[in-house]
Image (cartoon, rainbow, N blue to C red; front, side):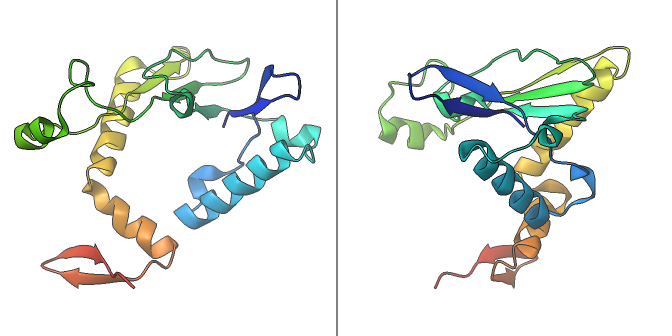
Length: 166
């Protein structure tokens, strides 16, 4: 994952530590590993081993307001995914919130994929992005698994999970 660090002189540095075996983790384990690496980067307590062995990486220029980017692969990587800012669709940015609600317009986020064709075929990348979109809209029991991994209190109603407010 890419971590943007602002230096004391105002310049920026992008560091890319590696979450190892992320594909074997549930959401809680991934979140803890992610937070640990971000903490290490911001406190400058990381080591060289924290940056070795990335095969797939994630960059989030959306935190800076970027809607979409085309991230560049580093040597040895098979793919990099860029997450854009969550915002109103083009043409609706300045619309009245009441009109947006009446029209049923929701916010969108762009997810891009740059991949090495020697490792990943374009169709596989497209299918992966489709799967991510399905997960974010509640398919594949995605949120059930996230809530369960975080031990988040829920109630089952009509076959769907709802958050219990305390």
